[in-house]
View 1 (cartoon, rainbow, N blue to C red):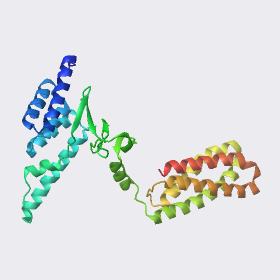
View 2 (tube, one colour):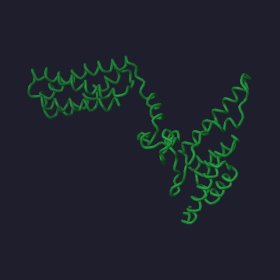
View 3 (cartoon, rainbow, N blue to C red):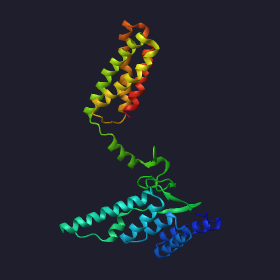
View 4 (cartoon, one colour):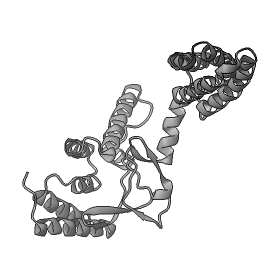
Amino acid sequence: MAERSPASKGDVRQLLQRAQVAIQLGRKEEAETLFSEVIALDPENVDAWLGLVSLTEDAEEKRRIYQTVLALDPDNPIAREGLRQLQEHTSQRAAGASSEVSPEPSDQDAAAEVETWTVLRYEEGVPVYACANHPDRETTLRCNRCGKPICPDCSVLTDVGYRCRACVNELEKRFYHATPRHVLTSLVAAAILGFVGGVLGVVVAALIGFWSLLVAFPLAGFVAEGIWRAGARHRARHLNAYAAFIVATTGLMGMLIGVLFRPFGLLFGLVTLGIMVVTVYRRLR
């Protein structure tokens, strides 16, 4: 697609600003006209489409607009969440109609369920919001999962981008589900396997010297997998750090025992123990 001229970009930005001002003043018809003008100039302008969705109370029209936005931006969090809530509302209406227990919600109720965030202004075509948690702070950053405007203090950088703390905490609860019993069995296994690994590391190193490094990696994998299975493959926050520390501590104790019988295996035994600690830390993350 040919890129718009600078004048056209300036017109679009000005129209978006005027539309937001009209919304704040309660002039919805004027805002709708301005957003429509933006779409006429730039049919792929996601902000204009999302502006329109905030002005309509018809659920089907909202659905159509959200689908249009997703066609332009498949990962748009606002459109995805809006469609999810509309679908949830439709399911609730169907359940209510079949049971005839509660009155059927209206399309206006569906519209009210879709949360939108007011744009304060535009800077070079980029919308500026008030932080959802700190209304006195302006931000252009949004959670890439729920779409909430967040300032730097409210954001968490994850492997998939910036997210709000609420979304991060919700996902961590699904990820970390080990019980105290799982944690205890994992740490006990770390103590036992770390000690045994420390002894074997020194003995094997004393017997075959440099070539013991070929045994170090399978031994480290065995220790890490044993701890992982002892905890029934359940994760807990910071469990990997605690298990790695215990393996390092008990492994040193095992090495001291091994050195009594094989004093020449200390150097490569330490290398083997280091490989074990790193493997356990990474395996239990």
